[in-house]
Amino acid sequence: MKNKKIVKRVVCIMSGGMDSTLSAQMMKDDGYEIIAVHFNYGQRTQDKEEECFDLICERLCVTQKYTLDLDFLNISEHLH
Image (cartoon, rainbow, N blue to C red):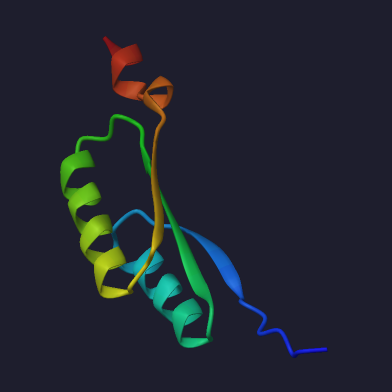
């Protein structure tokens, strides 16, 4: 029976900011393969956050990344 290498994976919810980036880096340093998830919900900074998310994923060598559009959470639409 051959020894199978166990791949440790973790899902990281990433905004593109410092806290989630540091968390993802810490998991990578601990040997985890990062599965990155970013949410768009109509936030004012959506374009910049998505740009940062893409760059961070590139630098962390993330091969699985997902952006989920949650437009129904856009609070600003309900304030008018």
